[in-house]
Length: 157
Image (tube, rainbow, N blue to C red; front, top):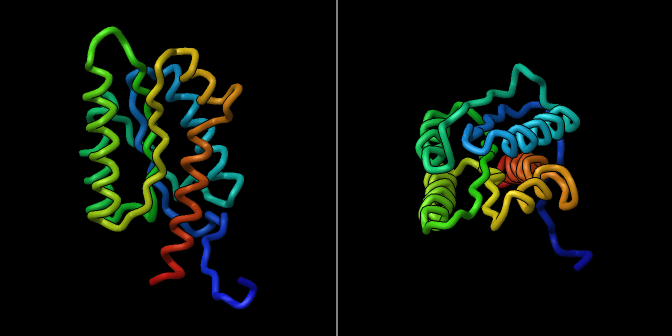
């Protein structure tokens, strides 16, 4: 393995334009994800002038906004942030499934890295855990993934 060429991204966001698409629905959770993502991007060298936040009503609307950003090449990478929490109806399954499929399709279609920071949880407690308490901050993890993937794709181009 020592002699095999290995290509991987680094975590330097200094010259990256990043758009964060954040849902307003479940804002008490999404705001923590957003703070974690922005803090992470700044720690890794991103400047505020290279960051853009776009607010959408909810997770269902995210794929359209993410698609517009990717198609226009407004950003080198996109961080998608939202929270879909299971309730008593099948609405959760439809919203979470369409959100995830839609965002994944945008990334493949446009070749723009997208960090998936959309929580899909069974309870509010699980969402809180993933937004900065017991299970870390999934917004921060999504931002790290975008930084690394932008760096990796630049090397592959």
